Image 1 (cartoon, one colour):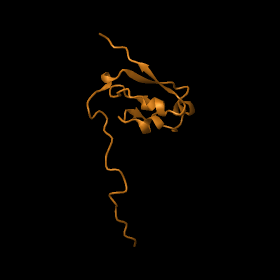
Image 2 (spheres, helix red, strand yellow):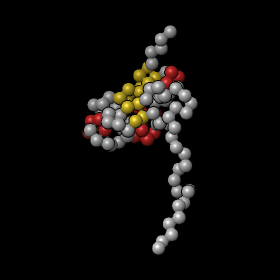
Image 3 (cartoon, one colour):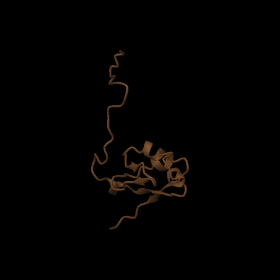
Amino acid sequence: MVDKKKDDFIHAHSKLCVGEAGRTGDWRAFRPEINNAKCAPAKNKRASCFICWLYCPEGVVKRTIPVEIDLEYCKGCGICAEECPTKAITMIEEEKED
């Protein structure tokens, strides 16, 4: 019998937590908008790509088809748009109500 010890240092110990700083969507000046005609998962109707999900520092991109972004917590950093290989995400200027 092989003794398989669990090595606690093989994997990351942190877990992503959406909204740790509260609802921060009203901080942003730009919001991401997804063009589903260009988005690989939406276009292919199967789980593929999700680079936006991988790089989102806030964890607000959902791995769904079509891909969704939780705008309540999105800070509008634009990393998802920058990393999208198909350029399906564009940053749109927010219109603030006075």
